[in-house]
Structure formats: structure tokens, C-alpha cells
Image 1 (cartoon, helix red, strand yellow):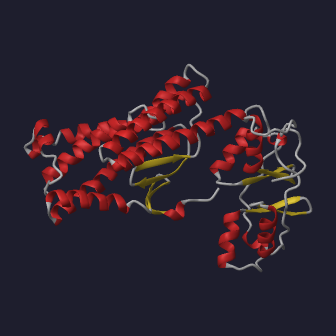
Image 2: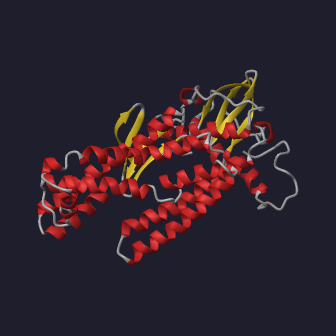
Image 3: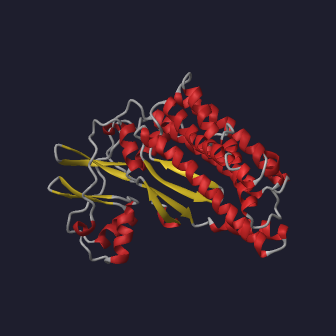
Length: 382
């Protein structure tokens, strides 16, 4: 799996969680400047729009940190938080094990916003406003005043919490819905129901945005629709792998490198075979592992004559043939690997790859016409 960090900029880290800006993020600031600037007819109004949008994304970041801290409380690692024009995403490295954990993690984000709302409400009298005054202070033509900024942040914070509670999976409300269903139904069935409801709501959101000029509503609807389908497919895959072990799927005939193979030879093997990751083996002992990203970066910085043992990774622990396939897949996702070596008693045995797992999935879903089960021991392919 390729790392997408090169498409985002790291801002800072909180408890080991990177907070990053997607490369498209400036578009939302440009949109805010144009919208408020055209409505107010001046630079001050445009600057007001930018300031408000930056503060809104501070709220979004706190919202995502709420999810992240709750996830970490349950032992779920959080890779990073990415801020984009349509919002923020806390990227958990696995799905929580229990529905009640997902329920708490999903509600933690909106809970942060409601806590902020209570805190901000205490300052309303400081600005000489009432709740009605806060609403009246909202205007696209607002000037750059502390009162106007406060009014927008107060209202947008509440909107952020309420919007995320819409039961449109995978928004927070949709995850709460899925968690509640999963307390009574099979997890896969609960996900399918939640994803279907999410897609219906996404279509309604998209149509509303399309006919009312809400371009960002359309983008959010597209995100919800596609993300719901992807997560439903992921859960289906995870469910279908239950009961199988690495031994049922891995290949024993994947190409390997010796420590003294040159990188240009590895590139040739990749082009000829389509294999993207290579175990580095000597005398049947796994000495290291090289991924496609490792190869790509090393070819740029070191050149094709570099030996494999110079760049190989030594931190990738092979999976056992007896390991549950679901657990092996989880490791591949966490470590961002296309494939992972299989070994036992210090010896290299073979390679487990997404390609092979996908073949298994295709057979199970009836997409393959061959009668032979892919769970029979593999003699070829990666």
C-alpha cells in the first residue's frame, strides 16, 4: 500500500498523532475569501472569511482528536488526522473490536464540540449578546470584529456537532447507528444496513446541494457515498476471512532476492512478474524485506547498483502459517504493506499478498468460474 503522506503537510503531533493538511486544503480558504469578500465588498470581509474558516478547522481538529483519544483508550492505534476542504478524518489503523467501543469513539467527536459550545456560551454575556444576538451577528458581509468572529465560531461549532450526528455512515451518526445495530445483528449485516442508509442520505444530500448551489454539500455527499461502499466491502472481506489461516492462502513460489542482488535486478523482476515486494533470503533464512516504496526511493537516492542488503528492512516480522488470516491482514494494514513474508522456526516459507487474498475474495463472491477452491495450497502467483 502506498503511503499518501506525500500529498499532505504535517502541522504538528499530539500524543504521537500527526495532524496534517491535505494539499487541497487552501481551496477552502480561497472559497471563504471569495464568498465573504464578494458579500462584504472589501478586503476586510475576505480576511474575515479566512480567519473564521481557520478557526472552524481548529474546531474540526479538536473534534478529530476527541475520536482519536477515545480510540487510543481502547487500544486502537491512530495513524494520523488529515484536514481537507470537506472536513477532517482521524485514520484509525483498525476497526474497534466491540460495538460499544465504536459507539463511544463515534460520540467522542461531537461530545468535544458540545463541551466547547458550553464553554463558549459562558462568554456570550461578555460580548453583550444574547442567543438571539448571536444569530443576528451572522452575515456573509460581516466585518472583521471579535463579536462577529465569536458568533460564527459559536454557531459553526454546534452545526459541526449536529451535522456529524446525521446517521449517514460513515459519519459519526452513521457509526453510532452501525454500533447499535451490531449489538443485535451480525457485524457484517449491521454494516450493510448502515451503509445502505448512509448512501440514501448521501444521495439526498447531493441532490439538495446540487439544486441549491451547495457545491461543498455535493462533495461531502460523494465522500459519504463512496466511503460507505468501501467500508462495507472491507467489513465483508474481513468477515469472509474468518476461519482461515495464512497457510490456506500464501504462495511458496514468490520471487526472492539475495542480500547481494542489485536494485536494478529487483526492478526487472518487478516489471516481469508484477510482484511488488521482495523477501531477502539467504540459505532459506529471511534476512530482510523490500517494498515497492523502498525500491522507488532507493533508486532515486542510491541508484540501481546498490545491493539489496543496504536498503532492506529488518523490522518486518514474518507471519506464521498458523496465524489467522484476518490477523495477518490486520498487520498488513497497520504496517502499510502490499505483502508480508511467511516464516516459521527462523526459516522463510513464502509470501502472503493482497493479490492472493483478493483472489480468494473473488472466488468466494462467485466472480471466479473455476471450480477449484483458492484455499487449496498455492503453487504459484503472488
